[in-house]
Image 1 (spheres, rainbow, N blue to C red):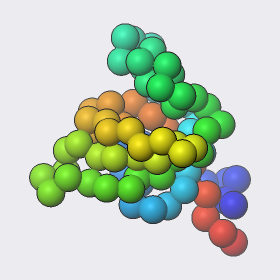
Image 2 (tube, helix red, strand yellow):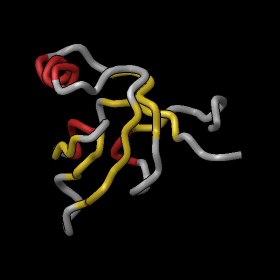
Image 3 (cartoon, one colour):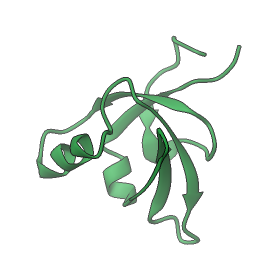
Image 4 (tube, one colour):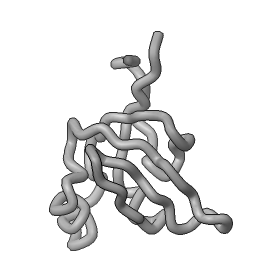
Amino acid sequence: MNPGAKPIQLSSLHPHIPARIHQLTDQNPISSRLAALGLLPGSIVSITHIAPLGDPIAIQIEKRQIALRRSEAQLLLVQPQLDD
């Protein structure tokens, strides 16, 4: 775990790297939808697949797979959880 890691957009995370959601960067209907899907601060997520043209991306949260548009993933700031 790397607690001092600077938060990055979920869309910038490399596949299969676990990350803890730090915050949603905007309060709008899309961020409300993301929260309803369980994408809340403290949750652990990872990118599992990226479409050939980069959009959409599939993420794993708990035991669920969710597809997000890249623009939606940019609303989530995450901290990569790298082993020291």
